[in-house]
Length: 613
Ligand code: AGP
View 1 (cartoon, rainbow, N blue to C red):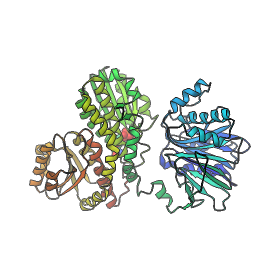
View 2 (cartoon, rainbow, N blue to C red):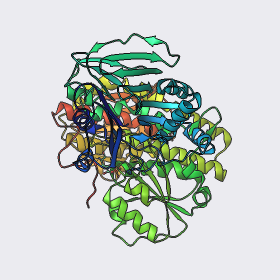
View 3 (cartoon, rainbow, N blue to C red):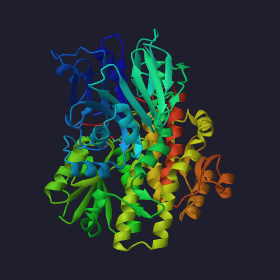
């Protein structure tokens, strides 16, 4: 999810763009850049923070009344200077910034290479820009028309903004699937463009939200909207009524809530371009290229911390069930200091949202020294763990700003399940019927997550009811046992209530002594092969007056009658169920934290990425 800012008007463009990029820093990024246009077109870009870009520009010619800026969250190509935006076309006439993913960029790139084009970056953006220029040169047409023609062939999501050296009084923008807002200056003599209204709101509250398949041609004192068929569209001007803080959070009260509600989209993004339910295929280049090593692994070691470690526990159950490969899950902080046995035939799966967790980095470097093959399942493209790994798969969950990990966890489960399905299919340890059923179940997850999110008001009421608890137990069995651990961690880190997760059957080995009428016990009890057993566990708790809150499958009348409170999620295969059953846990911890008045985005004592021991 990149950040975009552009300006054209009587003021100096650079200060407006720079301030706008800083307004967009909350979106997360790994590099940034600006392009400035007047008598010439200048592009400045750099890996790292906007402040580093700013420092690097001291003394440069920054005068211009038209320009654009970009903060990049890498999807194609490592974060580095050459992959940063803006990109320049082969001739140098055009510069472009882009937010989104061009899914057919590889095909476009091969066509352009055959025509002799060379590329300076690894990005899909540069491919699209040269595709536009190629059309412009071959059709001898203007930039606006070349953009319209090119976009008819593009598959994917984009916001693009172009500057044309030969038209210094014009900015061209287009949108499909990614957000783009136009700000209209109070005196109608300047225009602003941005990914959201946060860079615009201090200058004007008159905005136009660009719709899919629309093109905007902006001059200082003119705004023209067109469709790809070159037909003019009357701009619908709206008054901004959100304050800056609310805009950054997409209208949600906190980033954590925004990211919980992003999960239908982030899981869809995780599946996109990989899982094809029609063809019944899962395409993951990094996995396919190393399939022999994966399917012949004598052991898989999963190394991670915190929530990512919980995702590893779910993956242990899934991989052993589907692939029949022994799996061990290790806390990175323990693994790195003991003298572990690691054999060259071992495969290590390193799971990390940030890709910068110090314990995980050191642990996998140690395993690598012992000859293990490292697979990274990481969210941050180009992060340390992604670079140390021999191969891997990105979770594409976008920047996760809330300290408590939510959308990254469900994206990790999605990726790990696809990896397990691919290995099992290659090994022949899964029959076609079950493979197809699970693949379709995964495909349907985003819609089922939307169903779960509709339970939010009910879960908020539960949070109000139990927010004063001093302790809590989270219990689950099988695939839901790691979800119980994750639910307990969420409650601890967001509401500071002491909570423990346990395998439900472990209660009788001691912890049940804790149970009395003051102890809420959360059961993750979606219908699965352990259902009969967990019903007994619930009875054990009820017999000791414990308060039972259950996450169940829709229609589970048995537990409905037993629980003091319950939340019913859509049915799903037990392997897939954790992706759904964790969401009520996320929402419960969020609403308890809010009810207790805590800063749920920045809980005390915690950092988003633990880059130190
Ligand atoms: C999860 O809510 C926590 N913020 C924390 O446990 C986190 O999962 C852990 O620090 C691992 O981080 P990583 O996934 O970035 O490696």
